[in-house]
Length: 123
Image (tube, rainbow, N blue to C red):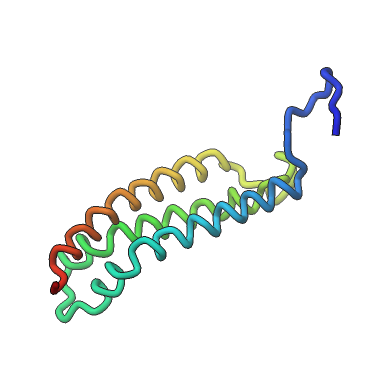
């Protein structure tokens, strides 16, 4: 599709393509922690004596990841909607910023937790 230089929209993707890319990226973001740290998750889930410190140190990264993904749901939902649409999130950029920040922080911390659980695993 050829665009005229004076077209107002600078979007390179159609709404459908943008929605498909957003949903695909979100699905990849959900699958990434599971694929990378399924062993660490199973070790954390199989702990014999859960305590407050156990939950704070072991599960905090995964809680951050889930919270970040939950904040990104309205962003993905609103892809392709007009900013004047009734269902468009009012603070979409805030959701995107916090969701991305919490997700990346959770990934970084989950890497550390996985390294610790790998060192504690029987060889």
